[in-house]
Length: 97
Image (cartoon, rainbow, N blue to C red):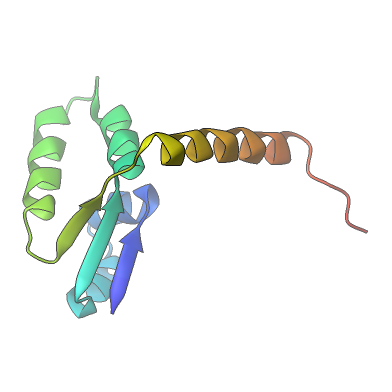
């Protein structure tokens, strides 16, 4: 099984969520995007446990089953467009009735 983890899944893992841990234990490959890493670092900075969280993330990323997916300029531009679209959808959801 392959898993692509989002920021929430990693946060839940670091909080000891047994369901996330069970899924990871069954996975042959685990992927994290560079954007998820950026979001995690955003949450780490300025927090009292910054060093501990960084060490925990580093140990996780060193596992042989974990791969960090990188991005190019085109991917970053798409990410930006999707972020704006998502924010607009949250601010003014469409009425599909």
